[in-house]
Image (cartoon, rainbow over all chains, first blue to last red; front, side):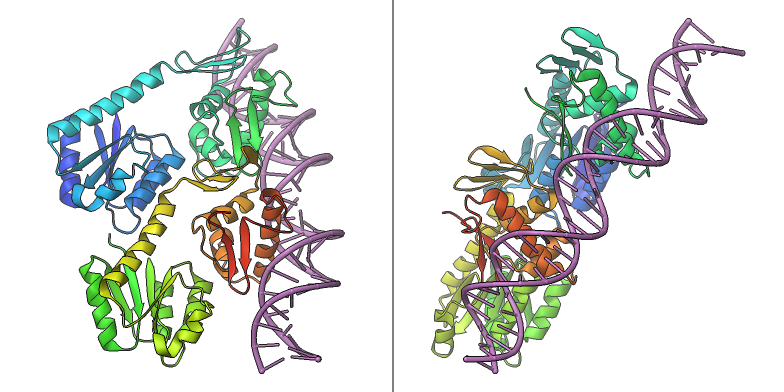
Length: 228
Length: 228
DNA sequence: CTTTTCTGTTACCAATTTGTTCCCGAATTG
DNA sequence: CAATTCGGGAACAAATTGGTAACAGAAAAG
């Protein structure tokens, strides 16, 4: 499957142009005309990259960028008009991976997109999460406890890797439900996450009744701790 | 999208002048000739700043200002005639963010407007709010006191981050209620805010009985102080 | 076709949080 | 100076959340 890119841009002509450029390069491109629509799309589907215009109407670009960064780890490229937003940019208070000022050179833009995507791919490929005795090899989908392989079921592994992908961050059961099971709303979803966490703990925690790896923060969610 | 400013001013010539000044600066300006109309507009649309004349007919400026502050967290700049309202002003008994006496220097006025707006923007962009030993990380939804993590409940955190998002400015309990709980009208709402503030203080104040971080301004609301 | 494993469901308990109520003192109003 | 409103505080009740075990249907393995 092709890499997917989301463009958040209100000016139709620019959006069209970028869409054309990227589609031509072999990417799957979606366009959202507002920040809100973009966020909704990001919640529903998964993208490898977001191209975000800073000067959006209604919800401003910075807010959108921050929200994206809070909810996922998708890389973001900011589009900005040099004259209008230069002060904002110089503040560097954006969590974006790169930014491009309008008008931009098409070739350069394509190059930057490619660069970021390949960087992310690289990181993803060589990822191995280690917490004390626990080793999660995202590449081989393998989990080791003190050198011994732990056999996790597909769902258990999916849940663990979801926590591992944002190690140290708290993830709500709603997000886990969506990422692992794919459902948004599901009567018994809460319970399912709860039980699966429990099963996971039985397999990877030295003492499941006093977990040290998978911790809970009341009312907020679960996290894979960074170190013991 | 441009920043939006609402002018509440009955004297047409002054209103026109200010509108011209601000539009020229690139703001989107709306004008209301009475306090009532202004309040209605504020309920319907959203503004980044309000310029309010103190000496309005019918509903007087102070009342309007108080009502605004009860309903929203928009910053307000007061316009006053030095001779008429000086006594009121000197008392500082207004919850406004700034005030300007008529007649005023145009450049100075523009500067003040810009200053307040940029202050709001700056706080919005900040992902970490620091007051002495208290650190609020808006990204990770984490609060530290002297380096140690404080575990806040979801509602407590929500309340604190609401105060932090307008650090240094007073927020009425009505606004807090709306922002944190989502309710507009709720019998026990006032109490709830009170109790939650109390619980928050127990967790982040060195001496909860003599708070230094979360302060109250009588009859107006609470604020997270800027520095100790 | 049977056995095992995985997944989803339910029920219950304990801990924690959230909502409510009542009381008191201080500030404000008339 | 009384009456009222506001803020601080404690204590109790209701609702949520998280941990646990047990059970049954579905899927996979033998």
